[in-house]
Image (tube, rainbow, N blue to C red):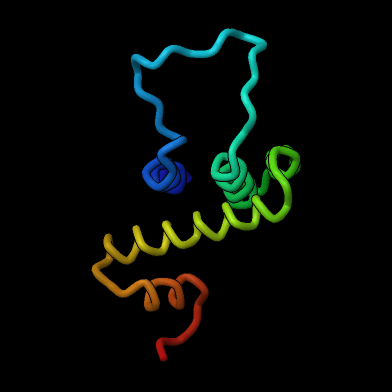
Length: 101
C-alpha cells in the first residue's frame, strides 16, 4: 500500500508540497482538482474504503473524474514500464493478467 501511495505522489505533482510552502488557514477550503479526485478515488478502491471513494466522487464531475483516472492509469503504466524496462503494452497486459500478443 505504501508503494502505491509513493507511486501516486511521484506521478501527481499536486500530491507533492514543498516543506516551506505555507499551509492554508483552517476553514479555508480550495476546490479539488481532477487529479486529486482521481488519486483519492483510486486509492479508495485499492484500500476498499467506500467513504473515500464516495468523497472523491463529489469533488468533480463524472467526466472529469474519468479523465483523471485515465491519466493516472497512463502515468502509472509508463512509470512501471520504465521501472521494469519493458514496453507499456507489456506492462498493461501483465497488470490485467492478459497474455502477451
